[in-house]
Image (tube, rainbow over all chains, first blue to last red; front, side, top):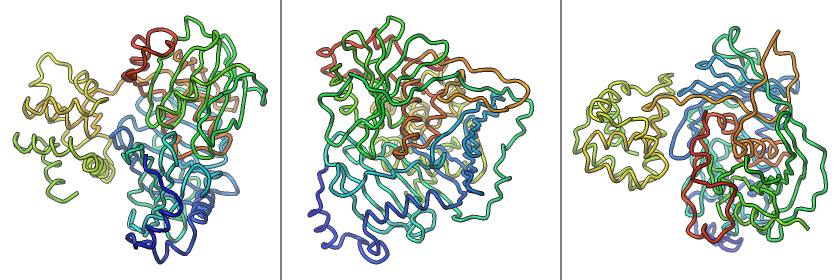
Length: 321
Length: 206
């Protein structure tokens, strides 16, 4: 893992790494992050995004507009199954034209359906160093490339290409310890502050005869105390929420503890071990991975977009205190 | 990525690249992750610009591959090669068709394979809004591991500290396969998880 501290960053800038100056230097790295968070919340946009994951690339058309305080959003896959996700406020509809189905869910996130960006906890002196790499160009626009580099091997690096004019993220990339891109979103073209009529955010095809589905009732408790703790959390991670969850029609309750270092999140799920809940020790979905083990008659599973070592360390360090 | 490589990739997808050049192209892509990414972006961009949901010329390529693979399932060939890039090196010596399959896997040309069956939806939030006169409640996904991934993504969003993890991934989870990975070398020293990992989650798409 590349280790970078503030002094090294200062030296790199002084040595004249390409582009360290001018527009990028108008703001500190932290100020760029704040500009980005504000831009994501307030900017209307539409464009074509290339999503890279697991070596595969998918083109998505995205539209995002806030009208009267209500978020209207559309994400449409340009290939494969033609998946469309349409959000109006807290209601999200996932449309599969090929399957002629619509699945409806509630979305309580304050941010956008498409761009979920770090909003808190990332600052020099935490578990990451944030610095400006150089100015580049993305989707025909000038961008400041920002790097968020962890201090250890228990989290991934982030690269952000922010529009110099607005701070809007034109490209984001998650990198492994060796710098290999794990996941990337990149606008191929974009119109910022586009004059989009919210009524235009509708399904591409009529869903009149589609099969409509909702989701099973799920009960999530308020925050609870649990005797389960990790006695070996990686530095900077802390429990930010603990809930008891259950699903109608499914036996047993699940303890769900969410750990975060402000940027990387890891969930730990604890439920009574039963022969029926057979869970693979290790798995991966995109940039996220999991590790599952048994402890004191319970199945303990950690999941998160972090390196393998992190979920394994957290899962195996959980103990009832 | 220079124009020559772009032309080679286009020719390859169109089935017009000579075998020796196809193998050279494959070698370069195998050895250069950045070039692979650029090539995949280039192809995706082209599809997006043309408004295509499939790859131009892919039908012809599929026919060529099918004709030469005989009794080997193309779907199986692609799926088997997809998870571990180093295995793509093996077919290089096997000729253009093997190379074609490998390149397709390298660049994620999923459309080569038939679309997988779509599973029953799974989600995380209750919904009781007015949807229409009738709607059915999707069956809860049997696979608890996938459910964990979904719960994690949603809970991360709900507390407002979600990282760069597009919700598209969450919504696609129900269609994606939870890929079983090779056990770590020290796995034998660890406490076993429930059941035999090799027997679980090999394919969670119903």
